[in-house]
Image 1 (tube, helix red, strand yellow):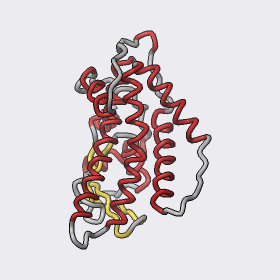
Image 2 (cartoon, one colour; image 1 turned 180 degrees about the vertical axis):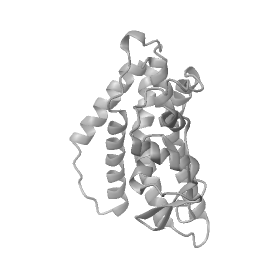
Image 3 (cartoon, one colour; image 1 turned 60 degrees about the vertical axis):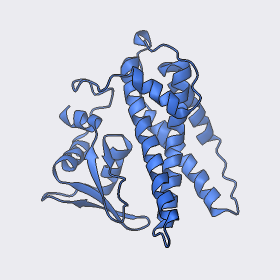
Length: 239
C-alpha cells in the first residue's frame, strides 16, 4: 500500500486505542467519585490494559508526525520489539505497579503483532515530514487531517484477506446482534440477540483486536457491551 493508505489505517487504529483508553479512565473517575462505587477492581484493570495498548500507538503517531509514515513505523516497531525482547519484570511490593508493567508488556506485544506484515511502498511514499508535535493528541490530529476520510471499499487499506472462519465471525457480528458479557472478572462470554450460531469468544476478541470490530464501551462488561463492525471490518467482509 502507499503512504496515504498506510497513514489512514494506522491513524484509525491509534485513534481507536487512544479513545478507548480515555473512556476507560473516565469510567473509573466516575466510579471513584460515587459512594460505594461498584466494580472498581474491574475498572482499574481495564484502565491499565487499555493504557498499555494505547501507549505504543501514541508513540507511533508522534514518530510519524516527525519522520513520516515509513520511517516512523519502522522506528516504532524496532523500539517496541527491543522493549519486548529485553523486558525484565522486577516484581514490586505494589500489586498495581506489577499489573501496570504487565499491561505495558502486553500492549507492546499486541502492537508488534498488529503491525507485522504491513508493507508500505517506498516508491509511492508521499507524506511529507511534519514539524514535531508537543503531545500525542496533536500528532494524531495532524495524521488524521492529512489522511482521506475513508478508504475505497475496493481497497481496504491493506488488511489481509479474511479466512472463511473470520468472515463467519464478521457476518455474525453484522447480522446477529453479538455482544460481550462478563459475569465475573476473567469469565467473558459471547451473547447473540438474534437467532443463529454464536461465534466463538476467541474469534470475536481477535477481530476486535484487528480493528475489524469494536465494542460499546459506554456500558460495563457486566451490563453487556454490543459489538459492531468498523468500516475496515465491513470492507473485509465484502472482499
